[in-house]
Length: 208
Image (cartoon, rainbow, N blue to C red; front, side):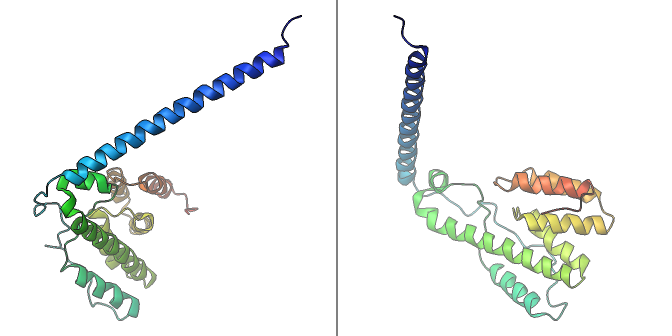
């Protein structure tokens, strides 16, 4: 009497599942081991000089301060003026382990603070530019949003609004420049931003 075919297939299925589970476990163990090895090395890395990093530089930047009377605009302007006195560094997409490996564990608190300043800056610039656009100050909105893009913002709304303003002003070639800038982002937002810019340049008004 032969072995039922369903029994054979059940054995094969269980063997495949077992193999895949063991393979996944091995990969997980390897990844965890590699992570802790890198983390230990990072914690032992000596402090490096961080004085010459690519900090945000306001030199030669002209932003529309105190041009219009509006509470939200004033709040944004005051926040940006405060941040101008701080060190600001775009570390989007860089892990703490990589920061420690590159610059030393002792510099992590400072670098984290500089990166937090960057996050606050681009969020404030986005709010500032959006409010200027709401008040029909298109050129000033473009100035603020373009500066945010130039320093590496990865806020989708910043790119979207700036592209829409370029379209409104007939400066469609600058949308291509935005795509080039967005393609260099080290951020999970790169793909959504590029998708949004593609839809705007193609004339699709249904942008989410």
